Figure 1: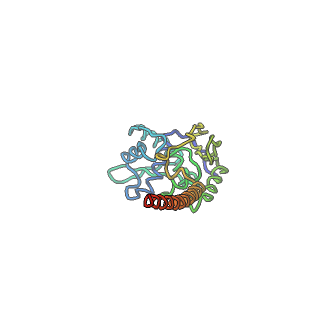
Figure 2 (figure 1 turned 90 degrees about the horizontal axis):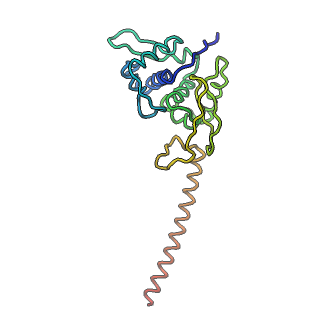
Figure 3 (figure 1 turned 90 degrees about the vertical axis):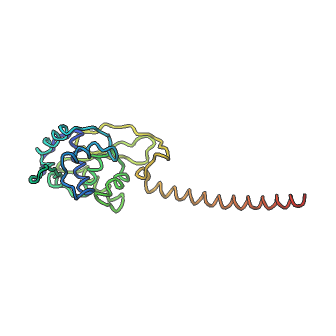
Length: 228
């Protein structure tokens, strides 16, 4: 039995799904989420791209749309209505794939290395190869492709991935150079880390050699001063 074909989701609908998936792992004590908590998660200023400002009415409308394909379910009982995602069952996907889709829905296109870091609180992947394996499965899914590998941007070392829940993504230009003061750990790949370590070791060796040379020069100057 194949999974039903999904409708094209809006940005807010994917944001609602992403927030529900994220908070299930990061704040399990308050999950399923109330409407207030869900709105706050959608409008969160950190770990979100793009940043949005959605009202309660906007989020309720998105929830109603997501109930149709059974991506969101409503919890009954208690004084406050609460909401939970149903992505694993509705899409027939493993938790690893849901973690990657969540990171893509919340933060936009990312490289496999960035996805490994940004999805760590949802699922801890052993290495980037594991991430790439699940991305390939999502990109070749018989019931409907859910991710796509984007063309490499000028100056980039790796390709980025994007989800297809909202249709074909627009290709965004990304800065070629990033200031060290604003660069995050997510922007540094394993290969770059190894290169940085090699550079540090080389610089340390050069510093030791320079110290020896400076010491020798100082000693010689000291002897000259005494002789004078």
